[in-house]
Image (tube, rainbow, N blue to C red; front, side, top):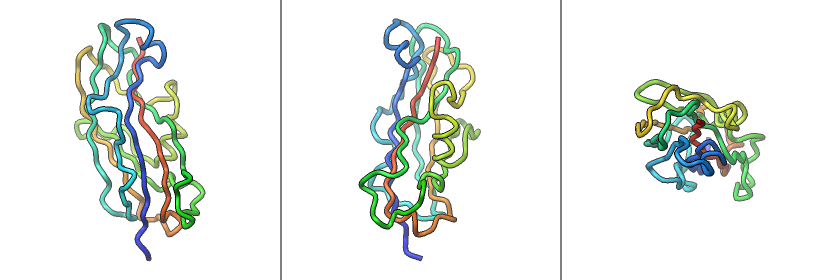
Length: 169
């Protein structure tokens, strides 16, 4: 089988109560201390069953009050970008990208990128992160890898998704 070259851009952004956090001072806001640039490079090559790419995100709760419902959700999921090669014929390339989000060795979410986007694609359907104190920084490990069962139809696929960190008052 030919090596599968798949590109994925996975930017990590912060959202604080969505618009609410931008308008009300001292509202809780989750801030990605590592910046909001791409989490996974669009130049990365993914091979079926190879070790996943792993990144770390340090996220802090800013504001004067505790967050009522901190969590994260997927934004901007596009399973096939125009930059995809003609060899990319998979219906939804994200169905074979396995995403794992963990904190302190505990898995918070593990499934395909397509599932993460479908199940947790809005603030109301976010993956919850439990209680969080103002000023507290938590470290998350995020990995993305191409499932060993991915075939040649995933070759040359370019897709994108982002994670938004969310906190409500």
